[in-house]
Every structure is written in C-alpha cells, then in structure tokens.
Amino acid sequence: MYDYLIVGSGLFGAVFAHEAAKAGKSCLVIDKRQHTGGNLHCQLIDNIWVHQYGAHIFHTSNRQVWQYVNQLTEFNNFVNSPLASYQGKLYHLPFNMNTFYELWGVRTPAEAQAKIDEQRSEFAHITQPANLEEQALTLCGRDIYERLIKGYTEKQWGCAATQLPAFIIKRLPFRFTFDNNYFNDRYQGIPEGGGYNALIDALLAKADVRLGTDYFAHRDELHAQARCTLYTGCIDEFYNYCHGHLDYRSLRFEHKRLNTPDFQGNAVVNYTERQVPYTRVIEHKHFAPGSQQPTTVVTYEHPDSFAPGKEPYYPVNDARNAAIYARYAAMADAEPDVLFGGRLARYTYADMDDTIMAALELCKKVFQQ
Ligand code: FAD
Ligand code: UDP
Image 1 (tube, rainbow, N blue to C red):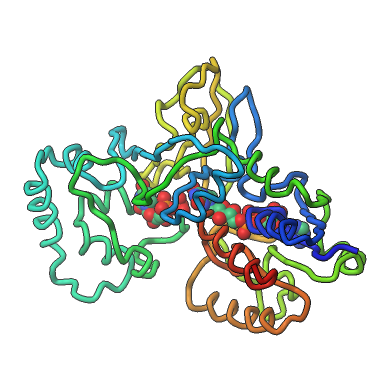
Image 2 (cartoon, rainbow, N blue to C red; image 1 turned 90 degrees about the horizontal axis):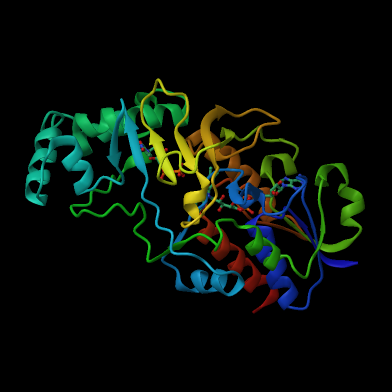
C-alpha cells in the first residue's frame, strides 16, 4: 500500500513525489504518456536535447525556487533574446531600444518616447479600449501593433484581435535601453546540456513510476493501492465533464532535423505575419551554447484548435470557462482523499517557477513541513 498515488509525472507531480519521499512517504507515480516530465520532457536527437512540447526557459525571481532546482541539476546561463520576423525583416524583442531603432531609426530614449507618443496620438480618441486591438493601438500605436502583435496574436488565439478581450495585454512593457532579455526575472537558465529530463529524474528518484497508464482506465485498481491521491490531470475529465468541457488552445509541433550546423543563429524566432502558418521556430541547440554538432533540430510551432485527443496547452480564460471551472473547483475542494494540483487540475497557465511554488505550498500543508 502506497501513501500516495500521483496521477501525472509532470513538474507538479514530480515535485510532490520528491517532497513526499523527504517526508518518509511512499509514492506510486503514473502517467498516461510513455515518458515522465509532462510538457518538460525532452528527447535527445543528434546529441541535441529537443523540447518536445514547446520551448521551456526557466526564469524566476523567487530565490527559494531557483535554489531548489539548482540543488537537483546544474543550470546554464542561457538568456532568452527572441527575434521577430515580419515581411523578411528582423526585429528584436521584447520592445526595446533595438526594436525602436529597427522600426524608426531612433537612437536615444527621448527620440523613442517621442515617436511612441506620436504613434499613440492617432488613437487618443479611444478612451475605453473594448478589445485587444484597441488596447494595443492605444498603448503602442500602429507600427508595433501591425508588425509585431496583430498577426502573431490572431494566429495564436485563432480569432480576430477585435474579438479578444483587452485585458490580455493590459501592460505592454517598453524598455528604453538596448537590452534584449525577454524576461525581467532575476534568475534565468536551462539545465546544463539543454534538457529537463535530469531534473525530473532527480525529482522522481525515490518514487515508483508506471508509464503508459491512464488513470481513468484503472481507477479502482489504482485507488486500492494508495491511501491518498494527488491528481494533476484535467479537472473536467476527473468529473466526467458533468459541468461541460473546458476549452483550450492547442499546438502542433513540427520537428525537423536539418543537415546544417546553424539554421537561424538564435534559439527563438517569432513569425509575426498572419500569412506564415506557424508562430515561432525554435532551434534547440542554442539552448546549450557551444554545441559542436554538425546538424541541427528545429521545431515549427503551429497553433491549433483543441478537441478531444489533442493536447490541452493554453486555457481559454474567458468568463464562460471561468464559470465552468469554478463549479469543478468547488467539487474538488470538497473531495476527500484526493488532492488537486498543476496546470490542468487548476485550469491555469503557470510558469515552471509558479508550478514548483504551488507544489511546495501544497506539500507544506499536507506534510506539515
Ligand atoms: P504537465 O506538464 O501538463 O503534466 C501533467 C501530466 O499529467 C502529463 O504528463 C500528463 O500526461 C499526465 N496526465 C494527465 N491526465 C492523465 C491521466 N488521466 N492519467 C495519467 N496521467 C495523466 N514555463 C516556464 O517557466 N517557461 C517556459 O518557457 C514555458 N514554456 C511553455 C511553453 C508552452 C507551449 C506551454 C504550454 C507551457 C510552458 N510553460 C513554461 C509552462 C510549463 O509547461 C508548466 O509550468 C508545467 O509543465 C506544469 O507542470 P504540470 O505538472 O502542472 O503539468
Ligand atoms: N505576442 C505578440 N508578438 C510576439 C510574441 C507575443 O503579439 O512576437 C503576444 C501574443 O498575444 C501572445 C502573448 O504576447 O499570446 C504572450 O506571448 P509570450 O511569448 O509571452 O507567451 P508564451 O506563448 O511563450 O507563453
């Protein structure tokens, strides 16, 4: 008899398993996939760690979380500096002095601010932005919106920017320095070598793991093996969709091995035109700088609609889905002997540091650490 059955070997389940072992508890971790790690899972192709479910860059301002992961595996000093490609021209991201120079030839922060003010003035009549398009135009004006935001956002979400809520881009950070670091966090990196599998292996070292096992196909048998369950799968599936299906945006990853040592000279290039079907191209070897590999592996990221059988990636946080989730959450809160955690059970987009922190907080409560 195990103390815990953990459904899902993603980051949340793995951190829980690690803390449970520290507290002297035994765990059986199951996953319906044929590998551990959830969306952090990486595959070694041509000696390059390929992020199978989308590029994962660890960034946090939380020192406790940074120390936690660094005790388990060494991180490199990768800094994410993506480029945006629009009509054959490259722009630096996030919006900073390099971008403003590329857009308008302005060279100083004062010149850039004056240009942005001029761009925004065209939309000064919009006092209450009713949708994402209006919000973006009032914040940054036409040039940035049309070249760097509109096409990417409409592809990503599969609808016109005028149909998306304004709150999605309440803030558009402008940086008036020549700094291409995408994140503002204090700590950033990728596990040494470029992949996350060693981190997950370290977290799961003391747990028993059963792969290729869907919880719903073996529910009774699995419950009989443990005193308590941590469930990190989809919350609507747990309750057999009794309040309806939660909506997601999905992605399709097209991985390609290429006979060239360097395809794009950068880990991430966004394609911000609507006509280009993918949103970004990831070149994985750049997550581990210094690779001598003569070949390379790139991934084209295609946004996709969600349907049963596809992977749920981004929750659609509109009012309808929030109301459905609230009903499931109320049921989960009242559930005896089952704990719920992770991005799918909480129907939330959570970065890795938030996922770890949420798992550690749950552990603190249940193991009274
Ligand atoms: P998951 O990784 O989804 O793990 C859940 C696991 O449960 C899966 O392995 C699944 O197979 C299993 N499971 C589900 N149902 C069942 C069932 N019925 N039976 C058995 N097993 C089941 N964060 C960052 O900090 N930086 C980034 O750059 C970043 N990039 C991202 C890019 C994309 C495209 C996405 C979608 C997310 C990104 N994230 C990033 C967030 C990161 O992926 C999450 O924080 C993390 O994966 C959450 O872990 P989890 O365990 O909650 O979920
Ligand atoms: N975005 C954009 N242009 C870009 C990159 C992002 O307009 O080149 C917008 C888009 O609406 C996207 C949001 O910013 O959904 C968040 O992008 P980010 O790269 O932070 O999110 P991720 O998809 O990596 O979680």
